Image 1 (tube, one colour):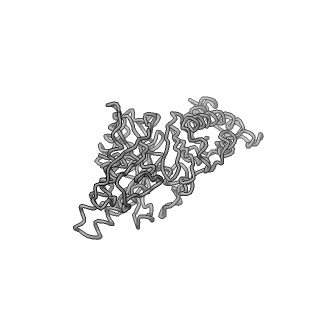
Image 2 (cartoon, helix red, strand yellow):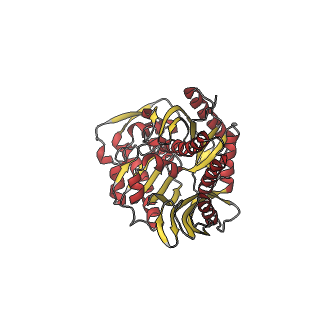
Image 3 (cartoon, one colour):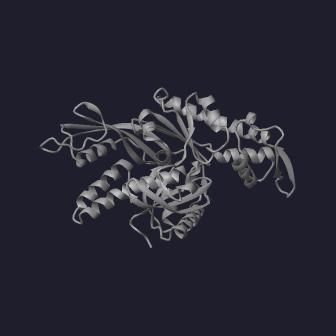
Length: 413
């Protein structure tokens, strides 16, 4: 049965669908109690191309998470990505409404609403409005203005948008299973919560999430998201290269990538071989591990070149002393960190999910970064509501205002 102190994150990727269920102990502590994973069907490059098949994949993953956790799942925090994602910066300005000039949560909410007023084509929809900083009477660099005194409140925001049709198809695919969508969360925003250190977000760092069909790039500085972009190339392209180059089935190529994948041929011995299947038969042949690296390397190098291009185009390339953190399904390839350092010319580390307990040993791997980030996001939002409602049953008004504040920031209806 559903429990109010349980939250579920749903990562619908091009290669797989992952559902994670967690028990909330406190806003800072949660334990993973259920994990469900299924093959992703109906997705291409992060965008749904078949609602029915996607729904079935979601249902299969959720059922596995329900069986493991022992509770039913009626709502999820779902990730969203795809080449349709874009971002822009905007500013909102309001006069402080309180006669005493003390800034309230309502003033912040009005400033965020003002920042939402941008010229958007009818086929675009706001997903997130992310505050970068607040400015009170000309003084900038303020992270939380509530309780301060002033007459003029400004907010600088990063507004993330997506194609309205892609958003609707994603929500419909989930709701067809009978599950409610609590919020849509940009994948790299979720992944960053799971793998980036607060110091990295503050100093300036780039998150690179290499998924199945896409590679997501997100730049963080001063604790906030400043830039995001999606590259329509990912781990599935590496698998396809292996399948073609080795003349082996896709499933076999995926297995080889996961078990023997390396991006630098020099790291592989010349005298080590593995047996692989020929496509269309049960015959096998021996292939050197160095040859596998020679196939994988150029594709990964191409992905990194696109990442570097996005960083340069962002205009923040000189503002990322924290370097690059790589996560996602292909982040475990041997030699990836070394190759990334050579190409990007910045410090690089592989990002592994953190800050969770319970079955954490299973999900402490780069492919689960987004799913872990989604439950971290959900736990923060859910914990705030529970804390307020449990404190006083008559505080519904405050709880609703907090929910509205989240709605403004994350573009929720």
